Image (cartoon, rainbow over all chains, first blue to last red; front, side):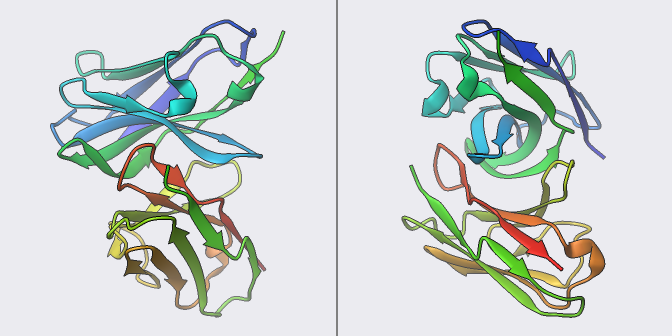
Length: 122
Length: 106
């Protein structure tokens, strides 16, 4: 059974950098696995931030273009999200997620971490 | 971006009822449509993928249908543990997008 546990600071200052990591257990980081971040707010609901596939190919939401770095490290059993120049609009609960992919498309998200609340505020 | 619209936004029902939630995409997504269930304080849980395939371990009272732009999630006989919020999500293209959610209440 795949388990994901995200961690990171709960409070980030505006214009700062949000860094989250997610420890993964029970997954083999196979070629059919992909790793994603999804965030949730009361106003916007669930928002896909981005995903990274085997071989490091990644894609992300236009709302974070130029600010985001996603990575998956099989040797560390860990995935990471770095979001730079944050604003209040980045305040959300962040979920790390394992997906199943084919041909670079995440077909579905089958395992979710517990969610980490992040507030952007001075 | 592909917009996903769910109906209704909320739904009151009773144990034993049959309920259907619909999801409409703004363009053809074939069957790249997934359904998730979320309970308060928890992460979403995958119920159905590729429009109609039941995820392992999900009770058979859940079913999905549809293709193209119109999809449905049906619960054949509501159980107390089914009262939650349900989301659809398209996997056809990036950015992946979710519906706004349907809150199923007693």
